[in-house]
Length: 156
Image (tube, rainbow, N blue to C red; front, side):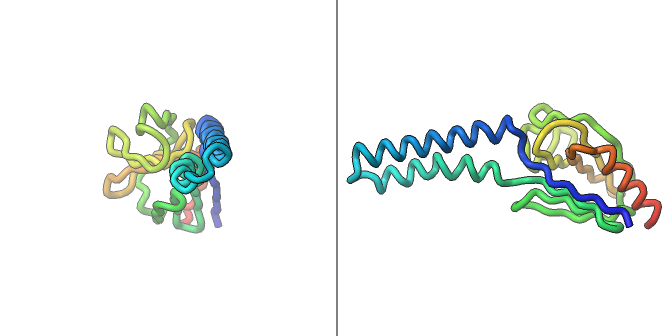
């Protein structure tokens, strides 16, 4: 049985600024509580947005799992898709620049109609399904994923 499982999180270029923004939010909240304790309620709501929003932006991650004859794609916690490997008409390794090719990270629609599932740049696997629908998923070991999908197709 061909299996493959990878979890891809956002890169340091996104995570570090989000953590810094959250720390600044904590600092602002602390200063506000010391200088105007009577107005903490309103400030708490505003500053909570400075703390919580950046941290929530770091939580989504891509999961790619090949189990038997099914490829599972997921952007946790928002989106998931399962694809039978016999529906994959073709696949190829493609270089992906998230901002240039898809306008950012996450689940994105590319300029050429492919759905991108990416948390960072690098090599990705472009899957073309039997009805022409295309998906691009970026994983650290795209060649391994492509070989495993091909092997699963031969077994199916």
